[in-house]
Length: 133
Image (tube, rainbow, N blue to C red; front, top):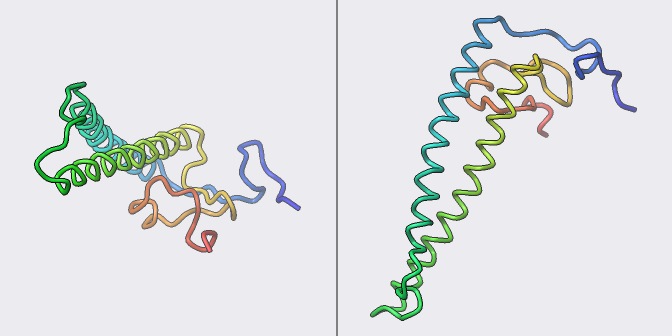
């Protein structure tokens, strides 16, 4: 049976945890990571677009099959990184929303505060280490 929740959506008895200064610190950390993620994502997306100039280079074989394979591998890697960066961006945006809602830093399983050290290292965390197991 699920634990009863309060009007904030947190389990009853959840501990209110962070000072305004700490929340401002977390917001700064998240916004800095979001800015870096946006820049990285922009570079990755533009590199993928540059690879698709609609020329005939990709329809004719180069001098070496190894070069063709390497180029394909690099495009696949860039596409994978774009997906990861988009997911990370979404997680950071969700963390900012939790700050606005007043639910940031609360483990979604236990309802207890996530340690400050964990949030500094992984500011988009939604689980304490104990709940991850």
